[in-house]
Image (cartoon, rainbow, N blue to C red; front, top):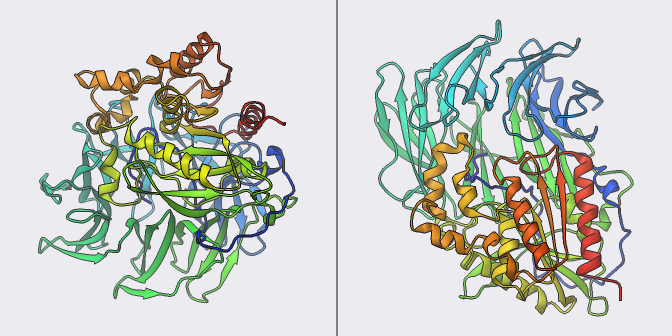
Amino acid sequence: MNQKRTIFYLLLLTVTVISCNQPEKSARTPKQYSSEELRNNVAIQAAGISTNDSIILVSNNVSGIFNVQEINVNDTSAKVLTNSTKESNFAIDYLPDGNHFLYTSDKGGDENSHLFVASKTDTIVKDITPWAGSSNSFFGWTDDKKGIYILSNNRDKKFFDLWKISISDWKPTLIYQNNTGDEPGAISKDERYIALTKPITTDKNELYLLDLVSKKKLPISNVSEATWSAQGFERDNSSFYYLTNDSSDYTYLVKYDMAKNSRTRLYETKWNIDGFYLSKSGKYHTLFINEDGKNKVLLFEHATNKLIDFPKIKDGDILGLVYSDSEKNILLTVGSSTSPSNLYLYNTESKNLKQLTKTLNSTIDEKDLVKAEVIRFKSFDGKEIPAIYYKPLQADKEHKVPALVYAHGGPGGQSRLGFSNSIQFLVNHGYAVIMVNNRGSSGYGKAFYKLDNKDHGNGDLKDFIWGKKWLAEQDYVDSNSIGIIGGSYGGNIVLNALTLHPDEFKVGVDMFGVANWLRTLKSIPPFWEAFRKALYDELGDPNTIDSVRLKTISPVYNYQKIKKPLIVFQGVNDVRVLKAESDEIVAGVKKNGVPVEYVLFPDEGHGFVKKENLIATDNKTLAFLQKYLNPKK
């Protein structure tokens, strides 16, 4: 699924939409669960289906970090395929022989991911991208499945080239050398055409079709302020598909006729279409629509564009799908607000839907967890702001609860309806949580997305403050006990809230937040080079007069204003928000004589993935909140 590309994006999953006009339910005290119990849930990611449709390849964190397993479709039994104890391994797909598989892994969160091939019957593992200091990613299979495509910045750390690697000898062949920052988005089955996108700003890019035979580069985009995203080619190169919000507030699907140079709008609605997927031979296609923070998935007979009935899963949100090569089965990843994602297999012929996994810890009663709901509130200028809200089951007028305002990553991310161990842990322990989708968030149209451009630390920050005001108006919330929490760009929001509006929030929880925009924007990882200019256009160029404003909204230059307790979490190997950012803000707050706690993880990068570190983050956050936000009377 195509997400808006942002340097600080913090991934959030998805949940069921509940009407915020439901009748008030009587409060009850749920059983409280430890972080260890909640983290004993299983996080799972679907990867591939074997050629005979009998087994599926997945990644899960049963071992404490992500490893590769396979699940037998018939009896749902699982078999462990990798046993890493240090680095997470993420499954990619089976090889056609069914006995080998591909996976990817980096070191300690350094984002220099490599691709590996391993056998199910022995311990031999081969790094097929053995280039030191490079970042590599899987880009798909060749049509005959005798090779794979990858993107790699081995040649030039600033740009990703497109390579083909033969699975017979694992030798790479260069398909496209990227010298200009034009990023491959799709390749035709016969390897004649490559769709390329060029970032201009975070609100605009360019889309081209490169003919590798004639070497001609055909522009698909126009000069409008719009985004364009390649989705794929027909097998015979008759048509090319892309998403755009050209002349619209929302992204829609376009079919481009290659011979006639004509365009047809295939599907549009009043929400963003985030993804278009074709099955292997083109029998089916699916659309993912971001409908108010939850996916709506539509299945079509591709030749006729006829809508086909798709299974409805109660309270379920389809987060991803994988077609089998036979097109008889579709592997679905389905989430909800009260359960981690589970995998289902849908048979397109029998219409049978089979659940393959049960990821919620069996000791947890799902009724003790809270269903998220979509709410909206008016901000400082009357603008309506969407948010995802969790109300503790124990909250009522007689049992007022503390609360937290949550800031997502970005700039340009989106909090979505979905399961979160960390959020459910806090809510289960009696903290109301509102996840604000501030102006500048994706998912609500082009105009809303652009509202924070060159206004970061002002309008977007005020949306969180007005989210706090909404919380304070709820008669079951202790208006004197409201804090703010967030990671990455959201961590910057936390720090700016404590510096620029020091009396608004009682405490702050910062996870690897940007503290110095001047340093962060100058130290963008080399592989983000193509996006650097676009990011500068949105936030400001630290090498120009923009540096004045960037310094103003950099918390490290305003640390002396912080007077409320703060806890900071940081991965030592973070290449996006450097450890120095957190070091300096913590040192500054200590000078103020204000309580500050600092938690460093030497084996993490930008975002934490190891279960023991996630548990530590949960427990240290709760202890901090119980000490400073909601001390026992």
